[in-house]
Image: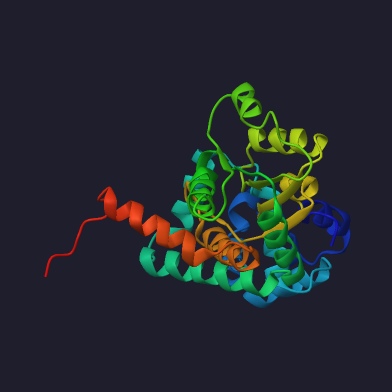
Length: 287
């Protein structure tokens, strides 16, 4: 649905039951916490039953509570500061088995990413990257881990791969100064979205380069600026972003790009193995 949760609540305020008004009041005052609660937990916080919460979501026009919760997360994900994330996490994590909660959450994100992946868009992105004259990869702050990982492997497949390092605005533009038609910019950003990544995308688009965006949803500025869009779930956990699903998606993309490429992978890696052996890159196993 196009309206956010707070707008939907306001438009329905005159027709809500007593229990639903309690839910509406709690969400309005604590939407940054409500966005990460189960229906049962939200019902407890608002003093109503879980079934009342589920009916409330339906009455607002959502297909169910999970869809309403995703809408709440869309509302807050780019607004929360690190301090606010920690405050939310305290309420969610207290009294729970942290490893079980986090690992199960990450597995769920990978599963949802797989289910929601547009296979045609994925194939088109792999083809675009494999045929590019020069591949530029930009991802700053926490997304720098992803861009460096992707760049490390693509550099073993292609002669001209450039990972844009984290730096000031002007220095980023200097690194993509010669980008143009025939090139591809892979832009990676998740909430809170980096302004430097968005600015680099706008510059690349103006120069005629194709842009592959890897982000969390179609409402992201990355998705709005990209020619090809790949989505991965990365809901926040405490003060950090979960990058498990994005990394898994990038893993799949690297393999698909290698398959799409006409490079002789066996010959390339044979050369690399010779170099690694000559310069003692890896510790040798002595029997």
